[in-house]
Length: 68
Image (cartoon, rainbow, N blue to C red; front, side, top):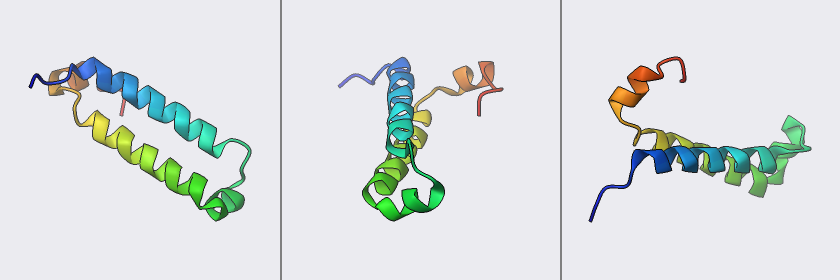
């Protein structure tokens, strides 16, 4: 099985970010936390962003070190 191209992980991260924006739109902090489902979905997508970020090669991270 071949390893997935790291650029696909960038695409995934953008999609997960769009999900986070959609899941949080129109909520203030208290109502967002109270929703449960939106809160959990947002947390999961943030986790997925972090997981995908681990697949970006070190040399690429070094080139773009200004991006956390």
